[in-house]
Image (cartoon, rainbow, N blue to C red):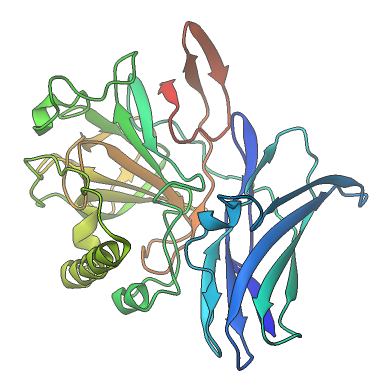
Length: 355
């Protein structure tokens, strides 16, 4: 049979500007002697009085079936498989209390056809009042929606385990990239760091606390890394292996580049990284207030272009801490010629916002 649980143990219901989301992974374990192929996932939602709200699914129907959004669906005997939940976003109007997931498999084992799991998501009660860590207009080039790379950390992958990651501290992270009103993040062809609107701009402390970790001497990447050219699937897999080997060799802290971690004194910690070399102006043990300039936007560590990576997490250790949803006290959402004032909600990928 297929045993299914979820990670993390506590699933948060995050309220964003346009929808609410659940961010977790299925962990499937095949206890039988036969292969099993995931054929469909369905989700049924209920309110606190057990009233039906919705039913959604991804399956193998049609010429280009939706189940193919999950690239690895084969469960070998006595092995596990991690699946990023593809049914994650729901209208804000749903008073969501519980989601029942049903996973159907194809297998020679007749007891191996269906598994069920229920999720009762919790709304996270944020303790720290947070402001955005920049001034001006910003394009969120990557947030933490289903397609965002912050969410997609395969913790069951043996290479990831070898690096030492046991949790995803960036599960609710943001990449804030300064931009113009048209969403352009750079001038010219963007091949140099100086072309970027964010380069050399100040990074502000998002919330009161004490500095518990810093780095300031990591070099910036002078040239902008270009996306990979299209490759065959087996070539992508080889590149992925090489990337994991690079991570193991460098170490995760080197990948952060120049950074600051702030202990807010209530079980919440802010991480800001990829700052400019020699720009970090705070020290470990410094008491720091919201709005204090901490450094400058750079391109250090594992960064493709100048931006601020921000995340809220439940501990100081980036290897073992889990990410927490983070809302900001106030920001403006730019919708063409319309400006919408937002308070205490989570922005996400692709939005143009102003602090």
